[in-house]
Image (cartoon, rainbow over all chains, first blue to last red; front, side, top):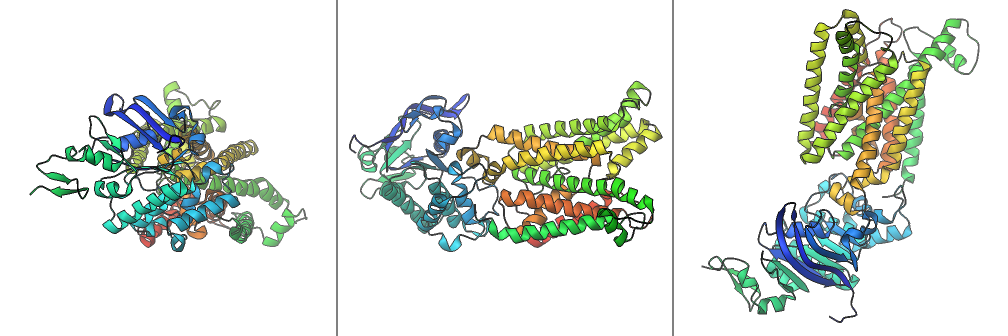
Length: 259
Length: 343
């Protein structure tokens, strides 16, 4: 990474949790423009809490988060909506929205007081539909979609919001292997082709190792962060799960059951 | 969201239907006035019987106007609640807003005389009744709001609304037991619901309340659309949750509380009309829904009131009975046909 590249997210000595309970502490990482980064770790270690904190949906406990060289807290919510977009595990409240309507809601930070879409907004919505292979589904309602399709719609909405940073909470849960790979490849393409910084939590460590530029391992102690191969060399994945149950194969970059 | 032009024709149609329903409402009533005479009165012509003129201008037209405000306003408040609470079953009745108003009215009509020991009609005028009912509904709305913030489960919210209904019913029956027949009757008549018998000042006050409610809803259109994704998504789109919740709650409270205060607790309109409108317009866009829900509510209320008047007979049915008879089957039909209610 050259030093001319912009830091989109910078977290230093960050502690997240729900006052007064600390869920995860000593988190340090920095992401540049166009980085695809996975947050991995065992259940309950604070992946989602970290993501929600980065998204400004809950306050941090201590440390600092910088988004585009300004403190996260210094952004007004309308300003922040142009810096980062989110895809959450929760389903949209109304599943009666059509795909096109839902994606168009991503344009809200840019539209006027009543939400009229201008040419630029329509272009962005169309681009999102195309990028996430949703053109045939654009008039379907969300309750008619499969899990994989709905997930693509939610990510397309985040893309339509056109922010430098996109945060996703477990975008591949409930999906079969094919759709997991499909989602992650679409994310990779979005990051590299459109120069978006994308951070997502996942349990698919094998896939993350193959596709991501950076990985943040939340292990409840030192929380290592780096490129997948560096982390493999430093044997961080071996320590993620108890060795009597799961073994990490450094050659293939995958986990095996310890028989 | 998308283009608004395809809806232009539908809106012209609704306005026509509204006009027809309005004409029907003022032409029919306990006194039989021929259609021809009604038209001639409306357009300033002369009629043989002077009392017809009086009935149309001083009774039926204000009543029809009130019906438009009441039906439209209640339906709009139902739409706001359904979006805000992310719950297709939300409405002024279900969430206990109407119960709150009833409690306020009951405490004033029956409780005040119990405590002070005499029926003080000096302060029992219609404005204090409206005020008491409004305060009651706002207090319930406030409690529902606080609970909604604590429990994420929308089902719990409905149960709390139902419990409020029970508490109200209990207090009302205790009050009724000790109340004088006269005060009890006043309360019972109020609880039947009625869009007639409002004085000119009351109609003006009600119009102002409904107008403010509608204006607040219109400025919330974009936020309401964002709420369709859920609160976290709305926040990530730059919506200030506290501010928008407050504005929407005030709008809901004004509409549901104010209307219930003047017209009594009117059932089912607030719950059923937004669903009917979504069936017909097939959209979730609040730019379309807000005006169309208001208009449909107004039409339905005019029709219900026309039926309640039992044309050409001296009897008037409680309007609540009619709205329930129309509204409850609609809700059941929606549930059966759609399997689940979506909003």
